[in-house]
Length: 353
Ligand code: PHE
Image 1 (cartoon, rainbow, N blue to C red):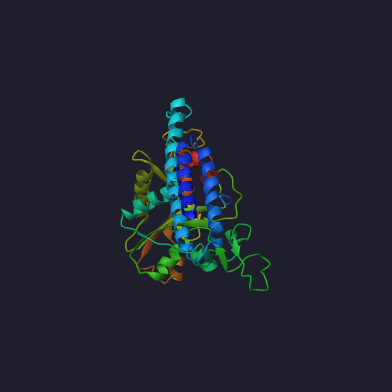
Image 2 (cartoon, rainbow, N blue to C red):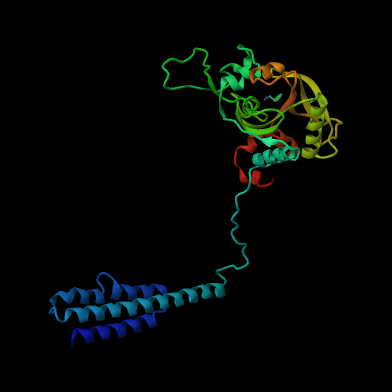
């Protein structure tokens, strides 16, 4: 028998074996027997070398044709058997088609970003513009131009993360340097007033850092939103009206605000603002520690000393500024008992918002 006939016979036997394979395992055995490394067809190809050069091309082509038709038949038979296999399992009840599917949760905005966006949008509605500044900031913007005296306690290396210039051989014995991780978003006030001219209506969200140990009410890294207005004829009444409007938008129409005198080096007079407790409506409860009020931000009228640093004419212009902690506002709005929950990334918690 010639090689051509041998190949033809092999193909017919192979096709018959494929057609009669009753499961995937025996189908694969057929594949190995014919097309595997030690398979029948491979054997023929190995023998090509003994053929005369005239015979070789025709036999080579014929064996390729055989390989193709066997592969095609194998693929078809496999698809058929796989489907039959699945159908059999469904029929046998091995696949419970009533099981719920596997849910793939899409990504979503983090609560901190959501609250930041809500705050910013309220002020955009009032005509403010968004400003930003660097997180690694100069001491000058974070403290000096904000009217902090040289020995102000907030400057201590125990409270502030200083950035060391590793190219410098010597390190200040106090641990302080000219570059730090900003401790608040107030330096953006200085940058905005340096770059622009009044009237200024600016809202500046961003990340800030303090050398605190994380606990239910502190995080070493958190977010603030800063506000700054500089214009002619601005009064403390404008500040009060603006922040009262903000609180009602943020927490609800029924919430009240109160302003308590406070101190900040860069505002005078300064105040802390409380919003009435949403749980007891001011009567006093555990959430507000019996006071009926929740502290939400610091604010005040821009100190003329600050205007000096940025060359704004304090005879002509008046300003107010405020700064609030995003995590704290999130916690108050949603009764979150521990700020650390916001940064732990537990989806069972974060999904709720
Ligand atoms: N920067 C102050 C803080 O972090 C908040 C503040 C901002 C106070 C603007 C007054 C004016 O506590």
